[in-house]
Length: 219
Image (cartoon, rainbow, N blue to C red; front, side, top):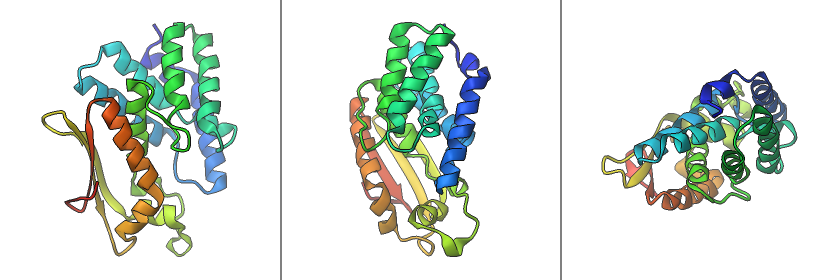
């Protein structure tokens, strides 16, 4: 079986992650480098583990999370589909089982909100992991006077935490937002579709999805 360590040590995969992020940086997007994909991989694996899914399925969720944004090296548009095709070639070359490749590629190909759907538990876990990664450190622009709305909203997030409730019935995204930098309405202006997608993904896993902002439940 292709392990998490095999994926981490694969220089082609590392190159595509790095180059994909360079492409997005040139276009003015927030960080999509190793910090983002590692966080996505970790949480996708963690949520399935806590819900009692088989260990191998949890590992495949990590692999999907780590590789999910490589399609950005081609273009931001349709990057989920490009990434799925790239992942197919890479994983097939590494000798991964066809059924496992199919699951990982389906998850990657269905993670972007414009076309996303939680087609399987790994896809659902990846959606939750990817869309809840909102944090100040993703902002590359250091000149606040030139912030766009994405910069302002991400920079305004002072703390973010995504976790399962103690009864394992709800996945909760808790944000502490500096409303002096960005009002909460700005968050919904750019992230409402993502939050609704998180709700759909949570339902696929038999969960509810709650969004807490400054201690108040808003979704």
